[in-house]
Length: 385
Image 1 (cartoon, rainbow, N blue to C red):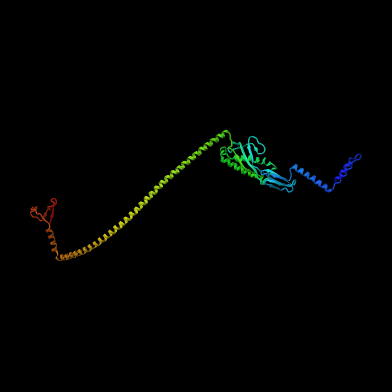
Image 2: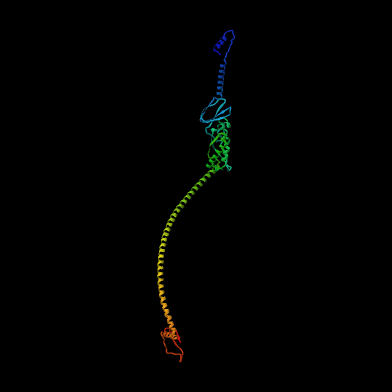
């Protein structure tokens, strides 16, 4: 619309006695421009009211999810900075990815990351409690789209998922031990690790990861507390006795090793002495063998010499006695030729060497035989016809 035409119309309207007549002439291009400006201002106003300004600043403690309303696609924005999107067609939502602490303490439950203390029934039927138990968890940035799909926007994932599973699983794992066993730090740690594994199996599909379960020493009734304390004292005494037994066993092993060492030294000394005696015995054997060999040679030589001498003597005697035999044969032949004369000569010669002692005594006045008594043995009497 022209400015001059507008001024003329206003002037006519101010003239007295006449009704003003307004004529507005607007070109289509100007009208379109005005409409665009009005729509743009309205769009900006609505975007400002809804927060869809086409950009979103994501801090280092957040993870973003860009949602396309037309296709339904969701894109995880894990790097901090300014993220651009198309308003009303797209939107960017942010989730807190800082580590969270779900604390179970006190007597009443509250919303969010607070719940009442955990009580557990032990395997032996007794009850114990954890005055404070903390579960540290965090959002899995790569699963931010699943978190929004399952839990909704903002901090909704902090309110229900960990709370829904934690108490029952913790009771299952810690309840596997009796009142004494659960007081053992090793068992507490093992139950905590197992609880982490089971919770992660359930929560990671929803984009939540358990980092650590922090437990304190469980509390019992006074009677159980005293029993546990007595058990600890007894265990300490058992450990002390085991240490003492180990010390005694080590001392025994040390002494046995010392004795074995001494015996080994003595054994080696005896072996050395036996080797020395064996060498001396071997030398003595060799000496005796050599001496025996020499003695044998000497005796053999003597025997051979004696044999030769005796053979010579035997030959001499053989010759001698052969001649004597020949003489005897000759004499025998001569005696044979002489007959009884030789016998009588031999008897006479024999009687010649016999001494007779004659006693002039006779018992018979006409004796027919002669008796004599050997004077060498007066107690004996002999007779000779």
